[in-house]
Length: 234
Image 1 (spheres, rainbow, N blue to C red):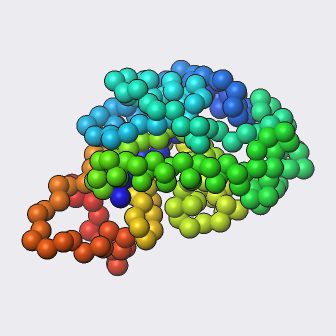
Image 2 (cartoon, one colour; image 1 turned 180 degrees about the vertical axis):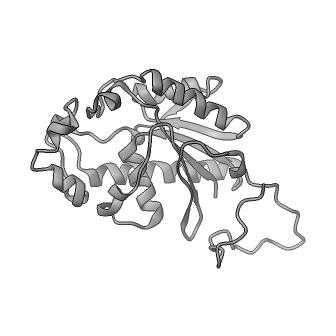
Image 3 (cartoon, rainbow, N blue to C red; image 1 turned 90 degrees about the horizontal axis):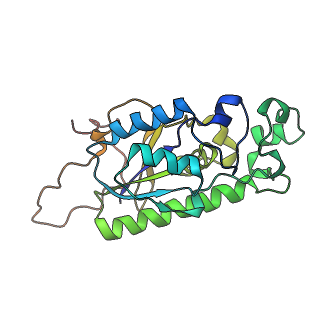
């Protein structure tokens, strides 16, 4: 199966001010624009079979700066969680709300006032990336890489699913602005290849050319390397 690169958008004015942007049209701040340009340098030389994006402006701005030669496909399933009446409010104020400890400790039960359930957000985001991954694999082969630009909680929910974690544990995962997380889906299980990578070399994620085989390859792509393996080829 193909390899997914999950890119979180760069820092926004709301991030810098300690607010919850939600689906509001907040834009990247100066730091976020620099982060987007920097991740573009890291992605240089990575052959991307597809680039998809949340419809929100901060994701589209990130991709415009990181991959100016690419026109991303908008994927509504990657949009930020609908925080309802929480949107636009300071996180310090929200931390005093009765729903706050539910979001922190039992997010699978959290439903935002006039907004979305976190479980619904996780389900539609996971469905979106798995559908796109199957499509990219069918069209471009199992060595293909593709990129999806989305939001912190959305990425954390996708990673939790890939790790086989209950959504109630997803707050243990971190997805910083402009970070890259890599997931390779296989018929048996997903593999989280990178997590919250904000500065590492990314070209190592490009699979080496497959050797020609006289016999069909064993369906071992889903097998984990017992003992840890030798790592990616450099």
